[in-house]
Structure formats: C-alpha cells, structure tokens
Length: 389
Image (tube, rainbow, N blue to C red):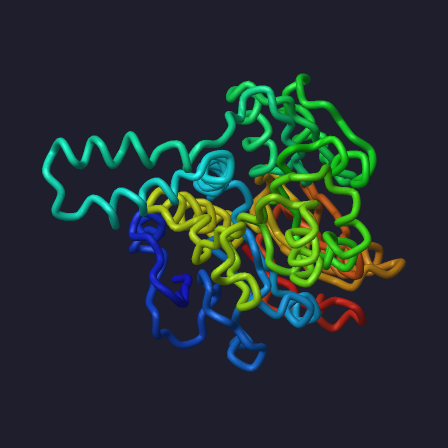
C-alpha cells in the first residue's frame, strides 16, 4: 500500500481519487511514499527518506527545496494550468477596475447614500457619477508578457473584449503556440511591447532572467499613462521603479495581487491579498491534477509536469517495470543494461530521458526479478535510486 502525507487543506475531490485499497492518505503518517501540499513550506530535513515524489497543488514551487529533492532523486510535480481560469478572471477584473473608477463609485454610494430616501439618493447619484468616469477597454492595446496557460487565456479574453493584443514570450512552447490565437501579435522585445501597450499584464515565473524584470530602466519604456497588472509574482517588479513610474505619469495605475507596504494607500494602486487561485474550482482542479500525476508516477513511473525531472511516459509491456534515476553522465545506461543482462533479463521496452544533471529510465523486463536486482542497480556509481513497479 502506498502512503501519501498531506499538508494544508487539500480538496476532497482530489483526495477521493486515491483508492482506499491501494493508498493510505493522512496529514500524519510514517514512512510516506509521496507528499501532497499547497502553501506549506517544506524543509529538507522534514522529507523522509522513503519519499519518492512531492506534488504541489498549484503552479509555484518556491515552498519546496527543489534542488535538494533533485539530488535525492525526488520528483517534484506541480499543476500548471489548473488554476489558469481563476487567475485569468481576476486579471480581467483588474483591467475593468483600472479602466473605470468602479471602486470609487461603489465607495461613494456606500458612504454618501446611507440613510437617504429614494429621491435624494437618485439626486446624489446623478450629481456624483461624473467624477467616476473612465474609458472602455475596447480599442485599447493589451500587452501580455508570458504566453503560457494563464497568459494565453488573458490574451484570448482581451481579443474577445475588442482589444488589440500584443504578446511576448521568448520561451514559448509548441503546445502554447498551438493554443494561441493568430490575432495575437508577437513582439520580440520588452521595450517595444511596453511602448505600444495601454495595459501590460505579466505572466512569468521568477527566474534569474525575470527577477526585477520591471526595473527603473525598463519602466522608462512604458507608454505614458499605461496600466501595469502583476498577478504573477511579486519579485517580477522593483517596487521603487513602480513608485517612480507612477509619480512621473509613466504609469497611470498599478494593479497587483501582491501587496507591498510602500504601495498601500495610494489612489493609483489597487492591491489584492493574493486571490489569484482562491476559488473552489481552482483548488479542486489542482488537487485532481496532482493526485492523478502522483498515482501514475507511483504505479507506472510516468512523469508529467515535473519541475525537476524530464516528462517521461511509456505504455507498459513485459511483466515488470523498473524506474531508475541516475546522474546524467556518460555510460550510465550501458552499465544499467549490463546488470540486467548479467541476470538474464530481456528488455521488452524502455525509455531514457535527461534533464540538466539527472536522467530517468523506465525499463520493462519480461520476468520478475530476484531480490538482488535493486541493490545491484543502486550499487552502480551514479545511480540515485531504483524502483520495481
């Protein structure tokens, strides 16, 4: 029986996917095979030696020690795209809030209309509405930086709202390119996108190349009076650069899901308490995706949506399957196959993939192995772990 240790409140719909006859799932459990979590900060010493996989029910994995997991042969999964629609809807809400002073109008009625009868209230509304005017999104230009699961949905919705949409993503995958509308104009550099966009929405991970992407120098490229929306990651922008751009008029407004002390209280800033994926549907989708990925890995060795190991999938054949993780160095596969040949194992099918410093092998053999096979494989210098499935 497989054991799954959970942290945080995981959606019941995700947990129900684990069959009770094959899985034990609990928030306190000894010798777990896998860990499933959301925002819980996991430290290396809290990860048992028995753990082979960690599933993050969300996209970001900054709460997981990924580098340490890779060294130990622990596959870290995430759920890209499972919360994409929830985030997209909040971005669209941000666009609408920035285009017209909706919040100001709501607060005006709430504060000034208390205790008024119907006729005085109507008079108040008619006299006050002129101060909350704005502009429509239709006909404006939306620049989307990052065209993955969320960014592509934002771009598509922008088109539906009648906006002209520019897109920039140097690392655009083939899969993402297929789902992107041909009406999205591809832009090659940030300066061009910023200079042409009335609204700019960021949808990037935080990497060395993207950290503080919006800095003082790049902020000079904004079209005067533009609006910047950041529902992706706090560290994509330099707060000082945002303040400078707002004060100079380069930016008309900054809308973000990541409050910073220096920005609170400004009329030209709208801050939300990290609501992007805070919907019941998003939490369910993330939990279901992670549960399915963990099951497929534990039972079949297949890897989908890992942040530290290559995506690897192989239809089962033969009698038994081996899942072997090793350092990505020359002659490893030959040594592994030599151990199998020495024990008269015939390979029915196999796949070998690598990612950075690690490699992963799924090998189907045609008969059950003896007890000495796994120790012999793990004795090979460079082999991190071996499992029989």
